[in-house]
Length: 30
Image 1 (cartoon, rainbow, N blue to C red):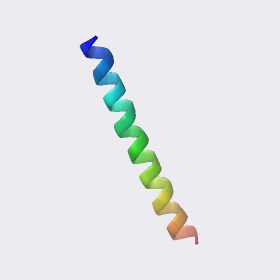
Image 2: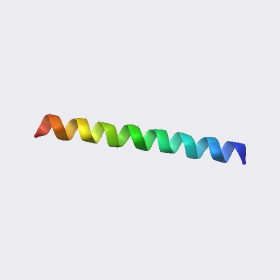
Image 3: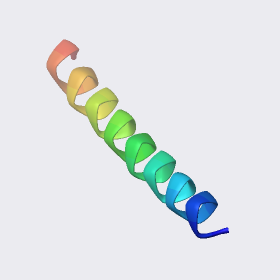
Image 4: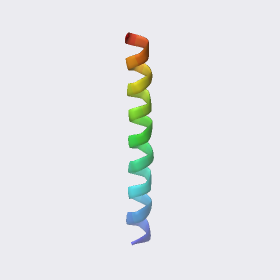
């Protein structure tokens, strides 16, 4: 269970990074 929670946390962090990158790229392109 602990490993699963860690995986979920990692996925959430990666998702936040991806959304952050998308926002930055959107600002640069616009």
